[in-house]
Image (cartoon, rainbow, N blue to C red; front, side):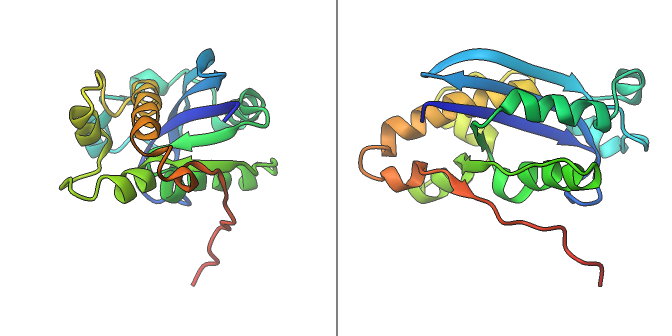
Length: 188
C-alpha cells in the first residue's frame, strides 16, 4: 500500500444511520510514514449520552464550540484524497457512519477499505477477543486514551503493521483493499 488513511470515529451511539459523529481522528500514511494528521471534535445536534461520555470521556462542553459535520466532513474527505481507508471494524461502523453523513450532505464518499478486525479474526482465531484494546495488549501496543479517535487510530496503525508482519506474506489477500457497496437501509 502506497498511501492509506488509518481512522477512528467516536459517536453518540452504535447505529451508523442514527448516531452522530463527535470526533474524527486519522493518520495519513505514505511509504509507511505518518505524513499528516486529522483530529477534531464535531458538534452534534443532540447531547452526548452519558454512556458514551463514560466510555470516551467526551463531554458536551468539549464539543459545544466544535464545527458541525457539514464543515468537518468535506475537510476530512479532502484530507483522505484517494487513499485506502483503514480502521478497526471500519466495515460495519466507521465507513457506514461516514457514508451516511456524506449522503445526507450530498458529498461523494467512495473509498476502498482494509479492516483490521477482519484480518485479526482470520489470523488470530486462538484469541478470545479481537477488540482493539485486547489486540493492543497482545501486541504490546501502547493504547493511552482508549476510545478517543486519534489514539485509537494510532493504535490501529501499529496493529496493522503487526498484523502485516505476521500474516502479510502468507495471506496477502487479507490486505487487499475492498470496495464497500453499502447503502442506507430503507425504513421498514
